[in-house]
Length: 122
Image (cartoon, rainbow, N blue to C red; front, side):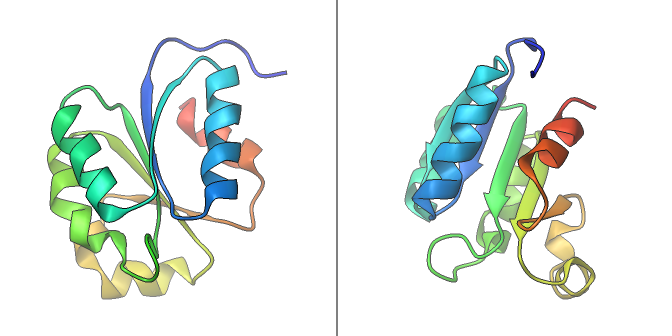
């Protein structure tokens, strides 16, 4: 069972409703407040409206039908939040090809959600 955590806010940006809902449900059960977005426009609104109040961002690399999150990289970096990027691609290639995401923590979508939870708790 997941221990109750302090009140942190996590933004979840993924166009896949199943992933978005599953991650949100798991995190809320652990005591996190979750904000979700399924489009780049929604994500930009959340980052603007909640600037300074988001502790962690979890984003799909190919967020919103192939538009990658490097479009949000500057906003995400300015938020000072911890950033996790979920991907099914080779993470070393992404880090090489997208230096604007160098500050992000990459996680494979193939790994269990428990691994993401462990990383969040650090």
